[in-house]
Length: 224
Image (cartoon, rainbow, N blue to C red; front, side, top):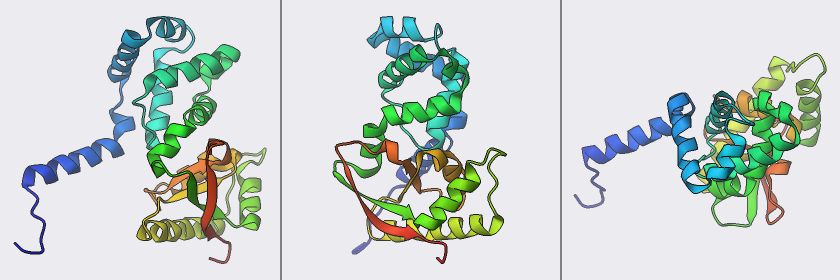
């Protein structure tokens, strides 16, 4: 048929299943799958695994860490780099093995070049979405309060709607949808926006490699 691309049913099904696996990767990763990943690294670097899993990091803690990475779409194909980063950070501070959120933050920084490559490909100038400074300051105050994160519903609504619109504009222009925020609020912002803008990636400033520069393509503002 002229002007149409014909795709067979099996390709459509395979593509759909692949998408479902990516979306649900964190839930699909159980203890057995985690152990299989460890065994794979053992073949490549047996001494590394011997020193780290489970001696420094129990298999359950490793599973939780990998689930946190997968929840935000971070590839874990390079498990050796993940385990090497674990060795460095948990070796310096053993208590980190019991703090999966902080451990995830540090591992993300260690994997930053790979994460950026995954989002942007080989380009060195990264076009990002930023938050208007006054709104960013208010968000930082609300989300890092000593009494726990408390975000005004109207502010949350402004942020989610504006972020979803900005993400769509970036993608319509052929750019990755990626929001750059301060380190301290990356996790709560990513969680808040996950449902409204599921394709939006949220990076912190410390996750931008020194080899890359940034250019602001869109700004989320309080008046948006």
